[in-house]
Each structure stands twice: as C-alpha cells, then as structure tokens.
Length: 535
Image 1 (spheres, rainbow, N blue to C red):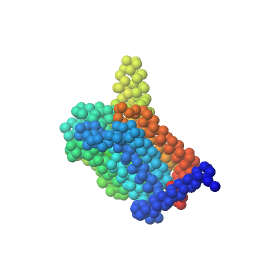
Image 2 (image 1 turned 120 degrees about the vertical axis):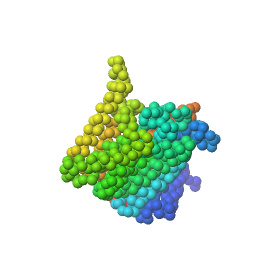
Image 3 (image 1 turned 30 degrees about the vertical axis):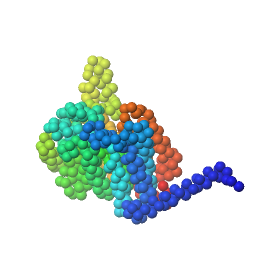
Image 4 (image 1 turned 60 degrees about the vertical axis):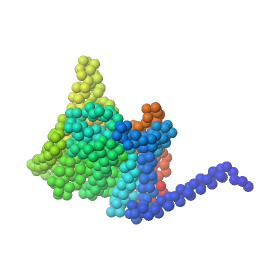
C-alpha cells in the first residue's frame, strides 16, 4: 500500500533530522576542532564550526555589498571578476542575504558557545581564544563592512604624506578623495585620531602607494594586532579583579559585534583597546612605567582615552590611599605620559594638535545621538532668532564635554568603592553618552572593562545579548554598498527583514537560545552550562 502524503512528509523529516545529526557528529569528531577546542572542550566544536561557516558567508557577502574604492589605483575596481556580485541585481541580492544571514548565524553561534561552557579552566580559555581567531580568519579577506572609516585612515595618511596636518586640513582637499572610498560625512572634519596612528597611516600610504586593497589589508593587520593584545590582556585583568577569565573573553571579544567591527571593519579601536587594557594589567602587576606608556600609546591612537590616565594612577595605589599619595601618582603618570606624547608629537610634526581637534569634535554630529540632537535643536532655535546654528550647537557640545570631564574628575577624587578599572569604564560611558557623535562600536570600549570588573547581573547580560545582535543588524543594514542603478532602499529592506526574522527566531522561537531571554539560562558565568545536546 503506497504511503500517504503525511507519511512521506514525516519520513522526509526523519531522514533530514538523521542526516543533520550525522553531520553534527562528523563536525564534533573533526580532529581540527578537537585541537582548537582543547580536547574536553570539543563539545563547543559545533558552535565553533557554525561561527566559522557564518564568517565565510560574511566574507563572500562582503565581496558583493562591502565597501570597495573606485579609484584607478584599486585592483578590483579595474577588473571584471566581481561584476556578477557587485553590479548584477541577482548577485547583490545573494550577497546581501549572505551578509545579513551570516551575521545573525554568528550571533547564534556566540550564544550557543556561551551556553555550552562551564567553569573556567586553562582549556576553556584556550578554546575561546581559538574561537576568536577561527572566526576572524575569513574576515581578513573580506571587503570593509560595518564602516568605511578605513578609507578615511588612508586619506589622512595621504594628507600626512603630502606634508599636511589632518588636524587643520581635510580629506576633501585631496584630488580624487571620494573615489578613494572616504565617507563624505567626515571629509571636512578634523581627524579624531592621535599622532601615533596618523604616523602609521602615513606609513601604510607610503608602503602601498595608495592602492586601497593593500592599504585595507595592512590596516586590518594592525586591527588584528589590537585583537591579539585584547586576547592577552582581558583574561589577566579579569583574573586579577576576581572575574571569570573565560567568560570575560567570550562576552567581550568573541562577540560578533566586536569581530565584525574590529576585524571586518579594520577599526583602530582594537589597538586603542588593547593598549588601554594591557596598560591596566601592567600597572596592576607592578610594571608602572610600561603600563603608563601602553595607555599613552592608546591615547596617541585615539585621544579620547586620555580620560583613563587618572584611573591608571589610582591603579598603582591601594583603595585606602590618601589624597597626597593620589596626587603624587597622578603627577608621575602625567609626567611620563606627557613626555611620551611630546616625543610622538615631535616625531610626527603634529605636536598637540589633537587637543584642539578633540575639543572641537562635533561638526558632524549625529542627530540620533542625544546630545547631537539637542545641539542641533538648540542651534536651529537660535538660527530662527537670528543667531548661528553651528556656533550655538558647538556651545551645547562643549557644555556636555565639561560635564563628562567633571564626572571623571569626581570619580578620580572620591574614595574608591570599586576598582579604578570600573571607574574608568564609568568615565568613558559618561563621555560616550554625552558626546555629539555615538557610533555602535563605542560600547565595545566598555565591555571588557565591565566584564573584568564582574559587575554584570543576569538582566544586564540579557540586555547585552539583545543590544549586540541589534547593533550587528544595524551595522549590516546601514553599511551596504550597491551600484547606483540598484535600489539601496530595497536592498536595505531585504537585509533588515532577514535580520529581524532571525533575531525574532533566536529570542522567541529557537528551542536553544530562547531560554537565554526567558529564564536567563547561561547568564551566570559561574553556572555549569555543559550540554550534551546539539547545535
């Protein structure tokens, strides 16, 4: 008697389920994953494999909708090899799906990796470090995603090569700057980067001759160096402050938002973070001079972390130190850091131009940053009354910068109820929230500091899960590069639809991950979350 349609459907479902189990079993038994996952940690191999596959999807997707410079020096802009992916509607759609879906699959792999963990051991730490490296590997060959700031780095290196200061000259003054890939939003803004990074940018431009693909690769290698510094520093800082080192690395560095921004976007924030974190590790371990120099290096990459210096000084002292000892520690920190910054300023010829650039930042204020919105609103009201919009908005921005600075000073002088690392995180958080420009990756500066300080609760961890995935989705949708004859709006709608559907599935329907958002399972790093169940 022939089988009925429901019977055939059940048979196909059972066969598919069995095939998936077989594939999962083969993945779990792969020797490479066993070596990467440290033997007993191999149960995380499925999540590692899923994340790696997602990273490959993202890499291929970036070839179609990632940022590609159109200058005549570009290697790929002068070939037809990418035409099917970049200028044909079908190729653009496929690459958009790969990028959006791959990003969300990596988010799932991250969550599942955390669920399948247990107590901290040397093997578990090695496994999570290997996972960061494994997921990063395909991103080395991707086109820039989530941001095209890397092309601004190249433009500012070109300014330096021409003998011009990026603090008083703009990328828009360079011939062909737009074709070289820089975002027009920053084309007439002073550089927000420190003299050390601008020297590195000049070196990249000199070495590559301005070829965008070669420059992106070198900038990405610098970003990977920052990731390696973070991988070294975070577990050591967490162990010193009483947090779980494996969990701290997982929640901050294995996070897809971190990897896709820092490696995929080739952001210099990774170097800045690495210098800051290693500085705290060294200062706390008694290597005061080296620690101050590492934090100074972070300042010379992104001057915003100058706010960390008072807390680096506090990290040298016991919590009960008197005000006199604090002042002596701050004086020592200021002298060492000031001398190092003076040396870098002299070598670069830029001296302390970054101070003025940092003080006047805000000309490209984002209206979705609360202070940016307020400044533009007050400026508009002043303009209606006959005043100047830009000057009025700058006064608003300056006022909030003073508030953020005052908060940092208050934290530094009060008797510490927590570690200087945590106070540094609070100061940076206030600076970010009160700035006229807020980028999604700014939050990444804070997470390693908070994770090492062990201040998370279950509610905040679940909030971080959701925020990370939402920011990943925003980065995908906002940063798509498509040909002008293809509707960017509809491509963004496609990416947003895929991402939102998958995000909803992870939070509400996935039998594995939905438990994280309903019962908070796996939010406690000390809870044994070993699972024999699959994927």
